[in-house]
Image 1 (tube, rainbow over the protein chains, first blue to last red):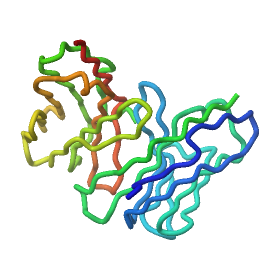
Image 2: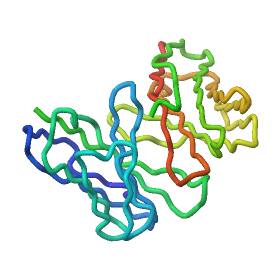
Image 3: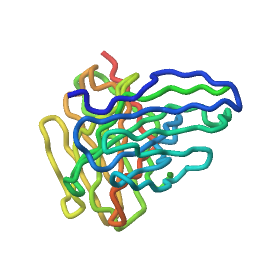
Length: 114
Length: 111
């Protein structure tokens, strides 16, 4: 099993450019998440999808949009990138196991906006 | 968010015990988690504890929870160089299926 797969692994954008970060999981999980990781700030939730067909804002949604394409895939789009969006982005998923169902993380996308 | 706080850095010698501390503010927290992040990788779940427990042991790992003080700790016995990583605590609240993470503690193990 691949688990949670994110593409690309690295990306450099210029201010104002757009891009989509892709995420797919093969564990038949219902819930998927996008986090960003900044030094000393832990992980902050951008958007999540509790189940196929639903998406909700997290703690820091501004500047981002998401699409839950199907049960496997959850993409994150930056319409007009800004230097403040330089970060490491993690996708995660979790199953229907209740509160003790752990989050499974991808290996991250390292984004630099110049 | 900063509802969950950790110290930034801990350095120990190989073979010593490491204790990583975490404080949280939401009394409705149900489960509390410890994740490990190695360089260039995502987070991996190490262990978790339910809020009605005060201790959980799993091989070299011991989790202590003081619910009154909202304090969580992770003790790693006989720390090895392979334990060098960033450790995150996280809480899950009654309100939903989301986790709130601390800022992470970077553990450095010196040989």
